[in-house]
Image 1 (tube, rainbow, N blue to C red):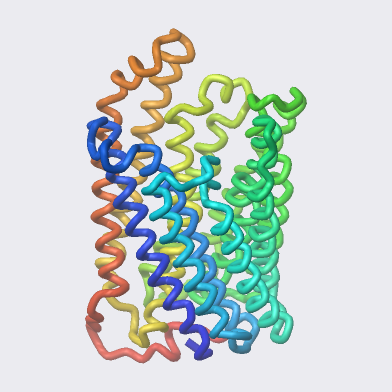
Image 2 (image 1 turned 90 degrees about the vertical axis):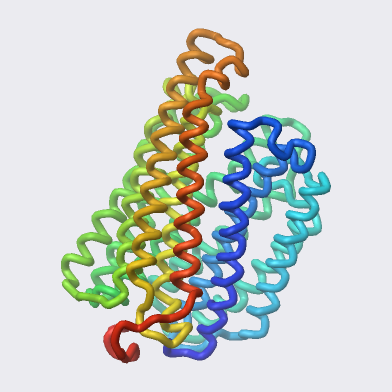
Length: 449
């Protein structure tokens, strides 16, 4: 750790991991409701469980992004964060808003729009949080060294803030509502979040492979171009059946096909850089999460997204468990694994230790990814059966759900293993440090650029 203010990232990572744990616990409880419908029904209805599960996911991922930014920007800009105090204020506001939202949901206080259920005052607090962060990061970069990684990260973060403003617009016409609703939901996860992902991944590869910055930055610009080219008009694959004009079926199908390209480019990029670098970096767990992130993103967001993005396929598959399979693996592969990679890389520096608990961390990687892959296959098969029984044969929805019970039990089992892997990961980064041999971390861990 070269700059003292990078330690701000530690607080963000701790809070993000708390919400990560909450998300996993609530997800397992929600999965239990699928197989035992009356489980906790009098205490927490299923719609509230789902609300907490998805909102906790989004908030902790954003909190992780903020922490990643506060860790990498000082090294990219070669100066300390503009205002560490504001960074801690931002974290306090974000954490308070997240906890207040969860409490509110438990008492039925929400606005009802999927993923945007937060009450108006919490939406406003999120704007304040975003402005604080953008001021801090923008001023740090503007007054320091300019790099492609810093600029792309800044563009992605500004995009997150700008598109969030559509959360305040809630038209009465439901078709119009969905058009603008997807400006947030799609253009976040299939647009500007990809810029954040690419910049963080590029930073990790520079640090862990020793490949020249110029080479990695060329790849970075190519991936960003592909992401923006495909992602913006790729929004059209959400407009098929909401009352939008029919030409969106062509636009959405064509540009959504291209959305596979940036994720495939990230796989080639990451593995090529590791092969070129040939550096035996001591933090093998961080390298594993980084490479796994590109593969998981390619299959989850790319392949599983493409499987049902064409309009004539989506006609049958939308709103089924096929969508759930894609959503789980896409979020996990692209963004969960990215945050866990950065946290795994940064924690030895933040705790001033050599890489530690490597084996435990890597076990968490293999258990978690295997469980998520199994869950994805299970939900995919469930979705195919659901499409055939419900959309082709016309069976009643609840009758079809009874036919899917075995798949839901298998999904619950996979969720239990994800929870176990989560515990292993948290212990590996926050637990006691066990050094196998004395090691200095100032030279071998962080190659000079």
